[in-house]
Image (tube, rainbow, N blue to C red):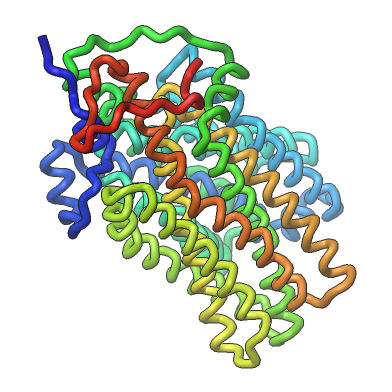
Length: 474
């Protein structure tokens, strides 16, 4: 009979060893665990081409409007409908995965779907066909946030997850640089009209999806729940399949997820109005042209990519040392991002303003992987898609809160005052994120008890009894 695992050994399987020290190089860590970068790169390529239609539509909206004889108001309405489809799709996908858990197939299928809709956007004849394609594109691109992070959790061991998630997250700012440049090159250098641009982007996206066909489905919970059960000598559990609402309820009963929801609300309240306020301030206060603002946006995205590459190792070491240090690091990054944005509204020098704005955006970029790792690590593997769908909705609600605050602020204050007002929800959110350490370890222990049972896990080296969080019970 297999001896019970100690609580410390079980936590170490989940990546929390309680030890400080340097992090081993990423490639060495992956080699030791028989993993590689190809899976992450494949998902990153899909995430980049996922943005093609939206980016092209944003850049070429005037040409599309003129070519189809549509008012800009109609174009805006179609974009709004696309956003609604993107917001609702994650819940449908999460519900589908409960019955048909083929995540890679679904990721590839939706990739081909948005590639084909991008291609056929260049062939539309009127508003109805355009709206239909945009709705399909919104619904398929909305699946990325639900499918990709849980797949990365199952494909990579805890010792590399933070760095892998940071590198994957760099695909968003990288897409913000590459897609507009690619579109500009097709228009300026090759003289393409808007229809040819959409067809070209769709063709490139199809090729990317074909290259991603080699991706294989990772074992659900391979490096956490399945690993715990294997080490404890326990056969894989045959859990029931609760309904969609019951699963979402189970996720939201986890104390750490509830606290994290506050953090995501704060991020949404800060990030969503950011682009609008910054553009208005740079144009109105500093007189920057559209081209100059575009150059700044690309430069800031480059800074975010560098920050993600550098921050991953430090965050991984902090997570290994324990939740208190990890969540303090995450909450501090959110507070510093808000402070950087606020100081940019007060300083009289343009270059200092631009530096602070780029710093704030970079800090905001690194918080996402931290919260994804912190949140998904305490959720059952089969429930992670539901957690991502719920957190995505909460992020969107935070954006509405931020938009409301922005409207209220601009009614009584100038743009600089509005930026200072946005500091308040961000500071509140950073405090909630920093206090996640109070619940994260208990929720990790609850996941351990779900995987191998309380009777299979002995007291730890300090004699503490296993702790159980009510949030992960059925």
